[in-house]
Every structure is written in C-alpha cells, then in structure tokens.
Amino acid sequence: MKAVAVAPGKVILYGEHFVVYNVPAIVMAIDRAVKVLVSPRDDGLLRICSDLGFACEYENGTAKPLMGGRKSVTFLEPVRIATKTVLEHFDEKKGLNIDVYSTIPSSVGLGSSGAISVATVAAVSKVLGHEIDKEQIWRLSLQAERYVHVTPSGIDPLVSVYGGLLVWRIQDGSKPKRIDRDIVLIVGNTGIQRSTGKFVSMVGKKKARKIEGISQLMGVMSWISNLALKAFKEMDLVTLGVLMNMNHELLKVIGVSHESLDRLVEATRKAGALGSKLTGGGGGGCMISLATPSKRAVVCKAIEENGGQPMIVRKHNAGVKVQLVKS
Ligand code: MEV
Image (cartoon, rainbow, N blue to C red; front, top):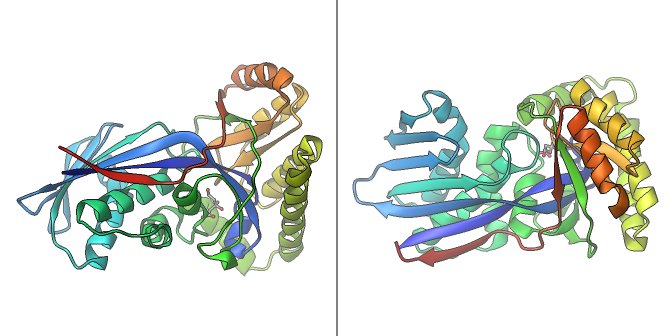
C-alpha cells in the first residue's frame, strides 16, 4: 500500500511578516499543489526524491545524495524533518520511500515548503496506519516549517491544511475563520528565489531593537486587514485594491521588498490593476495584483514586459487530502 497526499499552495493577500507578531492576515489556498507519495520499505532506510531533480537516502540520520548533489540535502530537509517528526510522534521506526511532485514554483512565496510539510505529515501518518485530524497535521508540520521560516507564524501550513480563503492571527491557533468569497488574482513571479527565513529574522531583529514606529506599523497593518475583511463582506474590489497598495508600502518600510517586486507592482498599477503588492516573504519571489476581468490580460502583459512571469490563480477550497492506494 502507498499513501498519497495532496496539499495546496497559497498567496497572502494581507499581513505577511506582521502575522508573525499576532497581526491578522488574510490568506488564500490556490489551485497549485504538492503531491507526496509514501510507501514502506523493509530495510529501515529513508529515501526522498523530488521531481525537481533532487534525491537523498538517509541511514541513521546521515544523508547520501543520490541526485542533485549537496543541494539536495538542503532542499529535501523539510521533508526529512516532517517525516522524522511523525515517526517520533507515533514512536515508529520504519523505512520509507517518499516521492514529492509539485506544481507550485519553489522558494518564491507561494507556500511550496508549507504544502510539502503538510502533505508529508499526512501521507506518512496514513501509511503507518494512524488517523490524525487537521489540527494535528498542522501542529506536526510546524517543526519542518521552523527549519524553513526560522520563527514562523504557521500561516503557510495552516492554509495548506484547511484550504479556502481565511483570516487568521496566531492567537486563533488551529481555528482560522473562513471568508466565504471568491477572488481571482494575478501572480507575478520575479523568478528570484530567496529564503523567507532570512527576511523573517531581519524583521524580528528590527522589532527587537524597537526601531522607531514599528509598533505603530503593526497597528496600521491590523487596521488594513480588518478593513479588508469588511471589504470582502461587501465584495468592494476597489477598497480591496487600495488596501493591497497600502500593505505593499508597509512591507517596503520594514525592508522586505525588492526592486524587481516594486517594478512589477508599479507596472501593474499603471496597467490598470485595482491594487498590487508583494506576497509571502518578499526579497524577490512573487507579487499579486487584483484586476477586473477586462484588465487581466493587460496586467499579465505588464508583468511579462517587466521581466516577470504572470500566472492567474483561483481559490482552492479544499485543504490537504490523503488516501491509501494500491502500490
Ligand atoms: C510567509 O509566507 C509568511 C511570513 O509571514 C512568514 C510566516 O508567517 O511564517 C513571511
């Protein structure tokens, strides 16, 4: 028997970075996903393989790259940590083969590492014969998330677990509130891969040094997220766009934007988007634009003309799904 788990990626509409400090954020699961296949093996070894050209075998915690050189050890580490967390949680010592397939571009702020951790936790638990609920999947996947984001809020694995459009702050724990609305967004990928953890740490240092105005900025971000929630209730797209623009300025102030992101944000606004902002960890990666249907093509063109790769994303309502299949 084999376990197969599928978990969606995400875009953060409002509140990335600030969410680490208990500010409410609005996040949406998207129609791009990770698939993880797990099957048992008899020799006690762990083998992890990704369709991005990375593979490693692990014996007593020591990694031997099979494909992709030393880079594969770093790339596959969240999968190894998620697997180890589940094995330890259930006090199991089993050999496993794990195969990871993804349609979420990696390291660009679209939640691929969160989705990989969530799908790994779900599939490893299932193949070992343990039924776990969504809250447990989320909690167990946080260990791997800490490796990637250093001091994560937990929002990325949360939306991969539950799916949909959610408003959440840390104090809500495993109980995000669903926003029963649909929205289509345009993602602009700068193609610059970067480490979210690095930027989360940088913001943390600024916060710890109490740089001038940082607590006021937290207040402004809470206000933006709460107004966005109200605008969603009324489906007031113009206000949602304005709030995205404001959110981008705040992210610039805390130092997590990048010239490539600012260029796409400017170009999409000029092309007629209602609002644009970076999404996720920043420092490269992706931005998002909200545009009326008649403006979407021209906004996509503006992204392309300014060196980005456009992609239309829609809400994916289901969270992680797992099942057993015959090998
Ligand atoms: C990354 O998608 C979102 C951040 O706020 C980090 C986190 O909340 O874990 C930058």
